[in-house]
Image 1 (cartoon, helix red, strand yellow):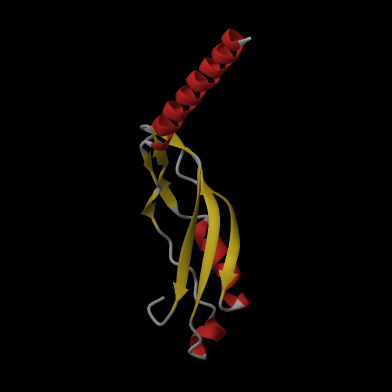
Image 2: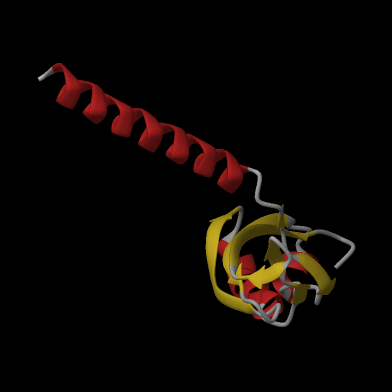
Length: 119
């Protein structure tokens, strides 16, 4: 009886150590986020610009393995009038894809687009 308990304990201990080492290996995997290589500024809505209204739209989307923007959505916005121009601009952006262990991978990111007097 004691032999069976010790053997089971040894298996559990070995399995725990293997999983712990695997977790450390996964945690150390080299990950690089996507980097924009072509950015298109959003078109500032005429009425908002004329009235001096500024704002920020934060978008979330995936950058695929080829560096394309996929499925952008508005995460938050200071003015709904800026949302559509922000979405139209972000799909024109191009990225150096994110990488994991040197291999391009799809990654989800967020980007704030500002509307101010500089647009």
